[in-house]
Length: 129
View (cartoon, rainbow, N blue to C red):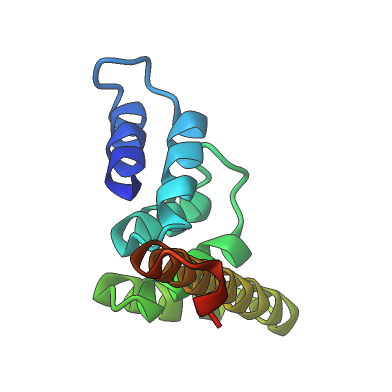
């Protein structure tokens, strides 16, 4: 599903087959990013940094680049580190908190998905714990 959202976001971002619409691209990219797509997480950071489809926001740019970096996106590491010099301590604290929450949300989703898969394999609700 993440790849479909990512591809659709790319079509909106580039205006391929649809009217170019950065806001729609952000919506699609956000869905893919929340599923762990580190390249799309990197793109979202850039969209927040440049204000494409969203209000320009270094806090969210840092947050998405930090999440992408935690998913082993090397390009995001450099961008995250460079943007830090333009941020106040308060903004940096906010960005780190948002990134932690995003990663925790993803971890929780993975745990739930794992339990669901276990239910499907065992055929019993009573064996998941």
